[in-house]
Length: 396
Image (tube, rainbow, N blue to C red; front, side):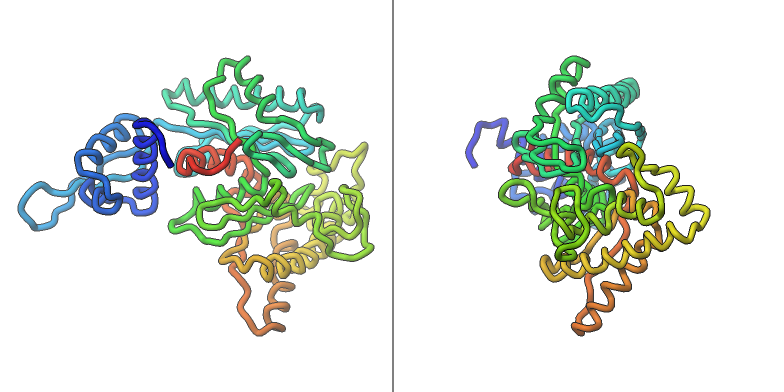
């Protein structure tokens, strides 16, 4: 990699931030030893990062040795914020977070119009409100990450295919930037990526250190997708469509899927399939989310049975994901997990355990995600930070 002094300085700043995120409490001398940078360079960069609100000094460490006591440094970011957003086939979610992943504010709304221009305009209106709150609080917005329901070309910000919303080759990034410019937020960096990919990034960027790797995040909602993180890098495939497990075949010649094929996993585990099995057929194409939630809260037997059956199908899918990727951890999230709870998750784990027992090997760790229905939106905020911390990766 070549570049001018500004690029080199940016790379060095990122290196220090990543070191302190992985190992909080390093002193300037320890940062110099670990990074290979000179102590004078470390001193200049850490002063800048402290002044900008990225770092804070803790009390000096008593070592019992003569000389100046080492001063531990750690990420602070109290004056910095990130914005994440998710666009689903029928709803919008927007959040602001700290650089550590604390959700500062969140808002959600029904998607009023599925036309791309109208949807982008509504999304930017919600983003603008939260951005103004951040600015009024005296904080700086570092960027916005947008989670989209389909295969995404992140470098161009194009949603290539989203069967559940009927979009194909929509330049979402371009539309959002134009709308943000009209709202006076044209300086805000915008990053677009698939919703499951961003939820996976949220688990790794905002989770305990060191992060699990490989990690597979499975997003269970109207659609069904997965995000794959190897090291600190998203695996998105040749065209951005990697992880579309909702359209892998679970039953040959089975139920018709939204994509037009038969037997896809989405037709058995997706929220529409569960709602229909629970006796809540979509009216005019819209799901009755509140009705399904009310039935589960009341312990309705038909709704519970629908989630249990879907969970068993998910267990088969987990077996396929496990044997394909050999992950260290699989994380489950999305609205189906939130609504179904143990009625959905426990049958999935039991089915996976039967496969593992038959093979005589231990299954990977499977856990429920940290951010529930906000996972993709929080993942969008995490991706804005991820782009800053990993400037060499492709981004929208």
